[in-house]
Image (cartoon, rainbow, N blue to C red):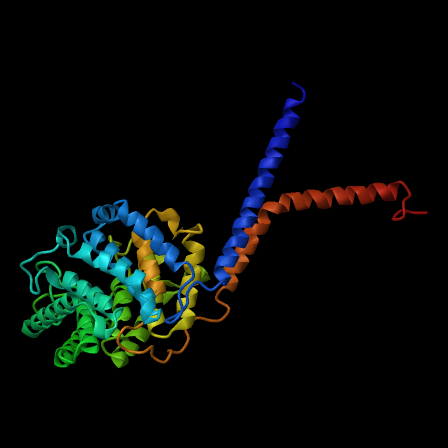
Length: 436
């Protein structure tokens, strides 16, 4: 029994050592993730992108689409769409003869959108049928599938469907009193119409010019209905007049900025810098993040934004990575990607990669789609003036260094105390440090 207290103390000492080692390893791993490039820019393939898609495919096969649908109204649709679009992005980075895998996976995703489950949340009675959200994103992915095929070898049925769907979308815009078509009965979000108009521009690039006037009219009408507080496209609009109904928000702006560059690069450049100036922040001085509402404005969180710690939307932050990349804003894109590698807690194996333990595959889908971003119609524009300082990592690296060192301070104090006692003993014994 007399040895029991010493055994307990020894066990606690080992537990503290193990905890200290674990914290130090985590701090070093965090520093590495923060420093190693996490995106390949508009032309290179992002590290780990294929492993992320492997995880997403396994999750989709296991029912992740249905689980996402229970979380928010477009969960099933969005998860499959982003999966397919990310494969298109990777395929575009390959020579024409090496795109078979990307084309097959993108087609698989598109077939899922065309299924009853893909159309279930949307109303067939809208114009265009099933609403501009469903039709715009589907048409964009369909155009992406065609983009992966050599022009002389495009599937005739896929081409006819793309042309017909583009025509229906164009007619709907031409007949509307607002530049923002309905996604649901009585509800219009400008971001959805932005995606649809971008798909018309993609049609004109892939097939033949047809919708130039439609796009010009849309741009003119959209410029006349900007959010007066920010000068950006509003988050929500009146479905009849198109007048702003809600201030511009980060979750929709991060998507809008991704697509505007393929509609009108000049208009997009001004909108992007406005968005970046009003929404990209560095909370607590620790890395870039994106607010859901412009600085000086607070508002409620919702299913799209997620929780808003310090006003920041994690979903908007992830998607802004892609917006920065298509605008040639490499410093911001690289910073957001690096920050995501640190804060996203990625888990990698030789076969898969997932973030936040893979609990929300929709988050993984948005992130891989953002990392693979590139313009589809236009070329990457000249980069805007940098908004991120070269030393942005310094506060985070300092914090990681402190977290890695703190667990070892008690042992260091004990070591110094023992050393001081030993030196004192040597002096009192007349050693080399004491009196002769």
